[in-house]
Image: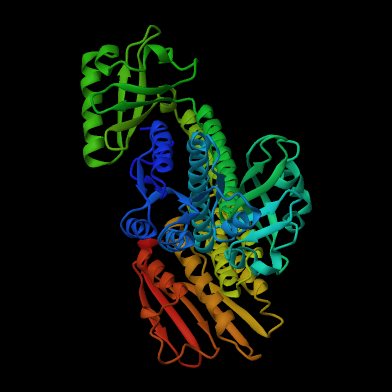
Length: 594
């Protein structure tokens, strides 16, 4: 079977002259076609009702009726079946009528006309198939364009929009008819126009071109879009004829990429700082598996136990250390992994210059690894060296508090910058509240950094600075609201200072935001005092409008109040709320929490 023919469909020959019909049939069969031959209109109509044909060869004059009836029925049943008119009447009137009735080819009966029939039929069948594929492809394109979330458009060679899908309403805010006939490049940000498909397709022979640009919406705002275009080119000249483009809004992706880059830069900075800090630590550090195999190793070349890393990593502690020490080490590894707690021990090793004392600290990391730090403590047993070591730790702790404070300030600044790009008022308020919480924590670390006692905070100084910053942020003085602060000389541990500071932040912020509406004036009082030898009392009181009677602060949907009771649980505090002439929160917690 010739691949040019459809094996499931024959060619129908309608010819009343038997000799001519046989010549036509033989010519087509030699070319590989399956042929059906009938000589009457009625027989042809009956076949058309039952069977589909690749093509129809139709004699103009038939004995039992009008040949045009066959064309009419064929087009009604299967509109794309090609009909070739074969006739001895070669006049213009017949040819014009044939074209008018949908005949695709006109063949005049000459001496050897039947030799031309295979090529004629192949040509019309091929054309009909191509036309059907094109019709289906166009229908599929229109269906996709109508329902796709991405915007699909076509432009002519000069960049003018010839069609565009309804997705342009969501993407750009325009109706399709507003964009048809316009130049798509006119909506592109001036700085991005050199990268568009319109700008690049003349200088590039690529058929597929992608671009990422900023596109202007109807409301004047810009969004980031990604366009993937297919350039249809003239097959001979290679010049652009049409461009089909799929455009997607990637604004959120660009924002995420920007945030990811910022986080990556912050991570690189943190990693560099961590590496610098690790490099500054003189101790020997190594990571080991549960069976004592060394996975990683770090030590200064000046360390008494220094060995080149290649002699350590991959080996087992039993292979490198004395048996007694190796067994002790394996025991501490098991204890660290089973209890998930730090293990500390001291040991002595005989070295060429004499025995030295060391201290090992081991902590679990992951489910089957431990990290150990080994320090030479021989000299530190002397009182003077111990004092130096303590000073080094104080400096390190100060630096840590300082870095934590700085990092929290960076986070606060990032929240501020993000809030500037948010138009929703409620969202901006959430960012502002988050900044306040970050600030209250950062202030604790700032006071620790400035304090001689690196584990406790002078809460009187801390409370004044925190409250003054909150009043300044809410312009409370201009509104006639004043702070009243009474704090005993108390130094709170970090674990108590942070939740106390966050409680003050939430309640003072809530009072300044909601407690004094419509120009109401008043005050907010903060007090912290010792009540007896074992307990401390924190009070935050305002004389504003107070909480509504229907609001249960312990079950409020407010995140701020929810946080207040969470922080109170951290302090193991009893909480009492009164609403007499305003709102008062009282927290009593054990001195052990401070």
